[in-house]
Image (tube, rainbow, N blue to C red; front, side):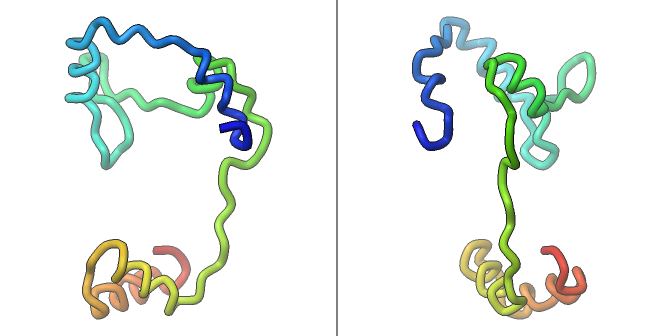
Length: 100
């Protein structure tokens, strides 16, 4: 935790007394859009929200991506997503071997 700069979160206290509220939010979470569907509409949690609510400074790039060869991408698709080699090949060709 110290390396990530999130060790201060250990001291945060979260009141989980209202389990119904937590279950309601969990039911309204949609994985595909990474947002909540509430009565007021679709609500997404942004990095700015996290910074404001948890008082965490956002000072650097969150993540950087390394360039992978198309063969490495196909191997990852097969291993991690359990798709066939043909499906992996089709996906990489459809994406013009740029992003999968």
